[in-house]
Length: 192
Image 1 (cartoon, rainbow, N blue to C red):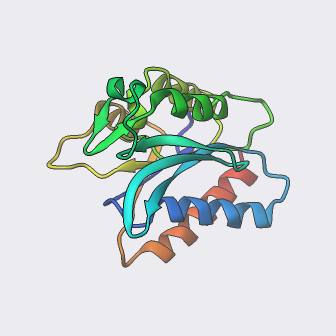
Image 2 (image 1 turned 90 degrees about the vertical axis):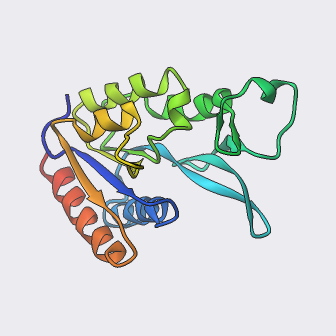
């Protein structure tokens, strides 16, 4: 399992800026270390005007694919699992995310945004996350905030991992939290 202090989990309410924080931390780390080898992905909203109609997975090298949508009504999508009003395209998610979670010896850091209900519909996703933890390569991930005290089982397991440090994001601490996480990660990467 990952050593203490190598699993960094960012949580907070929906829309608070967890993905933005992850992307900015990554940009800061890459600016200070252009040779940094990072694997992973983040999720981004798909919007039509002011309406959110879904989510896409974006790999760190810029490839994109559908994660979930409320606009798709194909025969295939009738079998897709749902989260709220969104149908989750597990096959699309797996085709992009799972290769990004393959542990390679030259990887310095993994980024996973997010380990949440939609992603956990993939039966292969959480085992891949556990392999990342076992690799002892630092992991920066986002997790949803607990609703009414009930964690998703995979999220609870991440939070209870012996190497996990949890950072709770809110509207007041976003900038300070980004600086803190950048500093901690920079130190972790310099002193493995």
